Amino acid sequence: MGILEDIRAYKNNDPAARSAVEILLLYNGLHATLHYRLAHWLHTHGLKFPARLVSQLSKFFTGIEIHPGATIGKRLVIDHGTGIVIGETAIIGDDCLLYQGVTLGGTGKDVGKRHPTLGNNVMVGCGAKILGPFTVGSNARIAANSVVLREVPENATVVGVPGRVVRLSGEKLDHIHTPDPIMLEIDQLKNRLATLEHALRKR
Image (tube, rainbow, N blue to C red; front, side):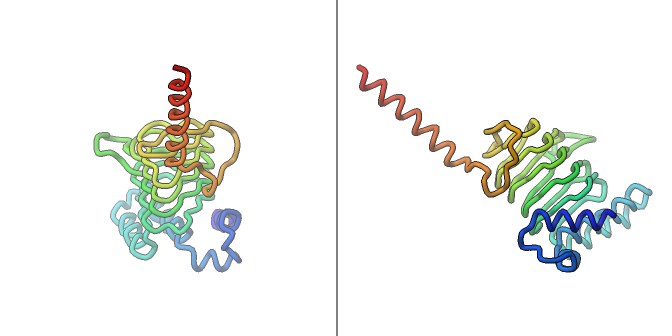
């Protein structure tokens, strides 16, 4: 059932996906997930070298690096996928969506649990970096190219470098409609300028 669930998840998330056969044969994100499952099984059964061999071969063929020690839930969708890195102690919940260039990595300062934990139904935009052993809550949205270095609450939208929570709600957002951090900064500057102009006119 796992592979069928994965294929359905890709079909639901990618409007360019035309058929299950196309997804099975041509989607490198799905291939990377299948390779990871084999590598993870080997890793958890003490076969560490064969596990790393499978993961490195998968990286060569898919452009996606998933450490066999990572823990990944059901129906992960990796869209495009090239350049994704998922560290050894990363945990990913069910129904998550990762775009190309995402890193779930460490900062080099931690021992033991070094990589982030994603809850269920988390979307991470292209180029985003989530670094450190903290949790990104379920239904969170991480905007493209954000750098997240601290805990993210459930149902939050995070943008910018470093990442800041700009929205907290149960509304389901998608990658296209995630707020632009630069425009948010410009809007804040405009509001401040208007306030200053109003104060000067009152003098």
